[in-house]
Length: 166
Image 1 (cartoon, rainbow, N blue to C red):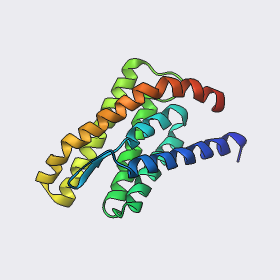
Image 2 (cartoon, helix red, strand yellow):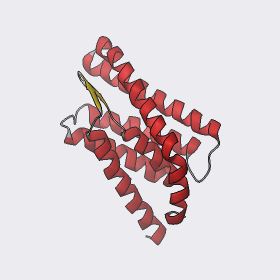
Image 3 (cartoon, rainbow, N blue to C red):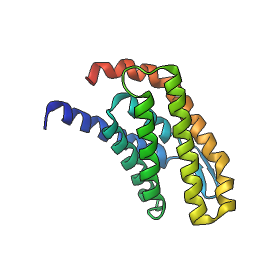
């Protein structure tokens, strides 16, 4: 394994831990739903890491948070897929050293749609249509906060990452 691969694995592991912590400690809880800033950290991982590493960090961090919170089934597998898809979209559209404002906005909108739609479908399967619909506003708030966090920090992260990630 090359020096670059080890570096990427280490950075991905740090992001996995940060995602785990920011998902586990929600800032807003209502009934069965909660909102957190973990999605913003996922988006920032996509600035620094190549897609496979960012997807791994997003999927593992979110799924491990669900497991540690006692929601192994059904939420951990759903989070694994949903957060991985969100990271994939952000890496493709807004990742790397430079991204146009339009690609960033499109990435944030698509990732937010994946988040809201994914957890809507999951809640519908687990709790029924009424509970799934009731969770939409909180998921929209979570997506908006994640986008704001990303927009506030992404330029700094891009600039700083250039020193450590080649």
